[in-house]
Image 1 (spheres, helix red, strand yellow):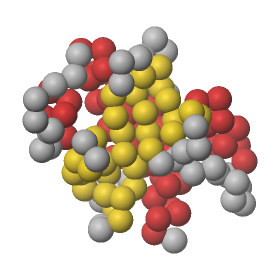
Image 2 (cartoon, one colour):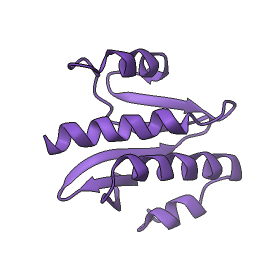
Image 3 (cartoon, helix red, strand yellow):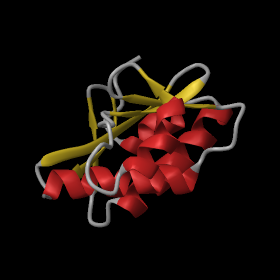
Image 4 (tube, helix red, strand yellow):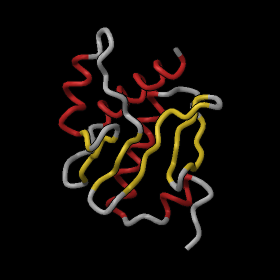
Length: 120
């Protein structure tokens, strides 16, 4: 199978559970990053802020993931990091398991915080 050329192709190739979750993640990321454009980088969807990447999101067997999610340790970011910390996997990944509802509000706030850092 060839690599997807568009986000729509990526989503269309997913099993239903993964597609539904990733569509929610996608919408939340785009709400958190107004004006972002989409592309496929490294074989997964990415929201781009101009020529800079914002966030990548991908579907796996048991979870959706966001990459790279920095540690939110700046002024006023402690509450966000407290919510993100239990979902972290490794240094800069956030995993959202399919058996739980997608925390769309949290994903949107993560995207907004990442956008603020990338544009700042």
